[in-house]
Length: 111
Image (cartoon, rainbow, N blue to C red):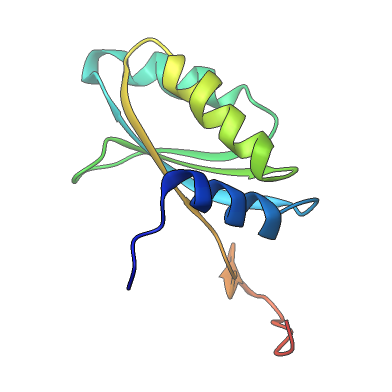
């Protein structure tokens, strides 16, 4: 598969999600001494649903909803990454939710 240049990727993604809500799982690598303060600051954002301290390759996982792709991008680049103690931020956009909070989600097969 051919590599997509960053600019091309941005254009494709922002066009695809234009005007649509975006949900994301955000992974953060943080200074362990700052974990409580980072968690509290992230939890204060109205669009952040869950903040979890975890073990493994990353230190914290955040689930958040955004009004559109640009809103998510702005949150990642200007908000989350600038918090004291945050060393690295990466994200995964949620494409389809099949089950959430213990409840099955009806998936429209034609989408």
